[in-house]
Length: 252
Image (cartoon, rainbow, N blue to C red; front, side):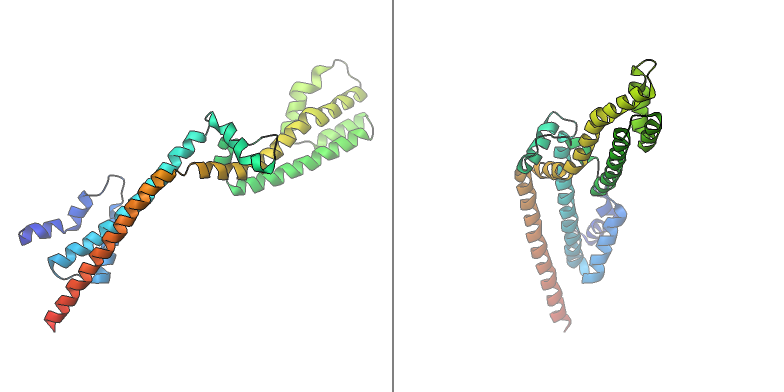
């Protein structure tokens, strides 16, 4: 191979043309420049070996990307799929949970920080609900009705006012207060319990989905490829070091 041809193959432009469409040219050139600065190649052979080291490192990054992509493909199968509910049950079977409130979708579209924030909100809302129930149980009056309603969050108020409050015609304040108490201790309490359980169960379901998304056979293949690149890196670096040592002897 002529020197002109070899020089053309060793230019950054030639390397950039070999990149995949979504890969960063700047990141590749930065990696190559860093390796050239570290090993200071002299001549075509050493330059080729340094560029080979760069490609080996770059291909190992592709393997990591492939592992991530395979993981996300498997995760997506569980989001909104028919397996989502059974997956949640498997996640919670060890803890003896009978009522499964969390779903794979809710677990994967939230983070640990969301769990903590929603948990605090649910605890606060549950305390307000207990307070409203206590007020109504102390006496079914118009004053207790107003005081209990003042304890509820807006979504609970909307549910009461739009669905439940007008079920009776010409109710007395006592009747409305009793119906509100029944609503709070029934439908609203049940929804609150489900809401709390769903948030509490999400971490376990999230871990189950992540675990099931790891395909051991695909992972083994990727690890084998990574191991082969590791050996290539070691051989290439050894060749480079040997060439540089020979060059040093000749220079001496």
